[in-house]
Image (cartoon, rainbow, N blue to C red):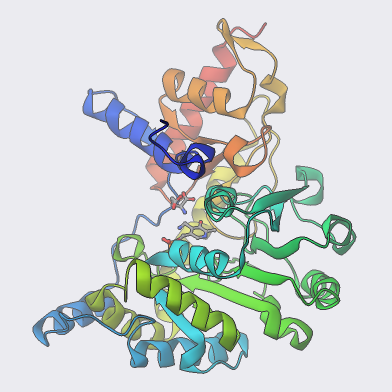
Length: 399
Ligand code: PMP
Ligand code: GLU
């Protein structure tokens, strides 16, 4: 008898971690590899957040918290949503989880039945499709390209909706493309969804603060879809707290209850010390942590200048998040030094082995023409990485 479940067999390993593990192995073997694989800030956790964590340890916050999180944290999240997004939520509508990843899974687990469809504008973040599979749903991909800045239109969305559509799941700002949806674009999307009350919007806003020039809009701001929207956010990106594992959802009351039920049977409340530290982080004026974003902005300028010079790369100007998602379709179907490149994953592997730069192929992001690399790395590493890729591709024999 097959040992694994059909569910497990349907799923893939997370490609971001597959590539970062490969880099780790190469480094352990003494190879000098630059990793631009995982998207995580290279900053330390700000001092006042660390101090709050020490205080929580000394104050013995060492027992289980309520499943959806401590009340003071849920209140701080509500205050943040009011302050930054003009959104009204009660603490009972908030569920704090082990990262935004779990928050998304809680929502999907609460609403999906076998065969229910989830619309994913492609490219999408690697885990979305896999989570939909895990919950026995079916992803429906709406394709975009570099020409439309990797964004879907309301018309494309309307066409993708069927009687089985249960959710729309996207990130804005977007991982991997670095695009974000404007107020006007989201309003049109909200108007479409409001006509289909069975659809829940899962709006992943984890990169909210990493938006260099634009104004962030949450689709929940549109009253016509407030009751249909799950806002997802967390501490990983803007506060450099990836390892602390705190994310949250803000949902209509019925859905918040669903998330609490799922989480209560799966993992219970999130880490108590990290929850307490998150209260401090969220209560602090976001401008205190803006220095990290300004640093990312400088790096984006630096890398944009360099990546444009790489032969065969077509690149958009990412307005948010900390990724570049260049189109490398020039190389697809060709041989590089005799290596057949059938898709972007082969190309990412070629770069890893030949330029010693770790990136992630776009296939698991729903786009086999692009590769993703993070620029949340030091300027020196970024310069060296771009130089290695350029030199490698200038010298390569293309056939
Ligand atoms: N959504 C997106 C778009 C992401 O890039 C990530 C990766 N950090 C997550 C969710 C999950 O974040 P967390 O670390 O809070 O689980
Ligand atoms: N979200 C980050 C990324 O896309 C971290 C890895 C992960 O959770 O997949 O690289």
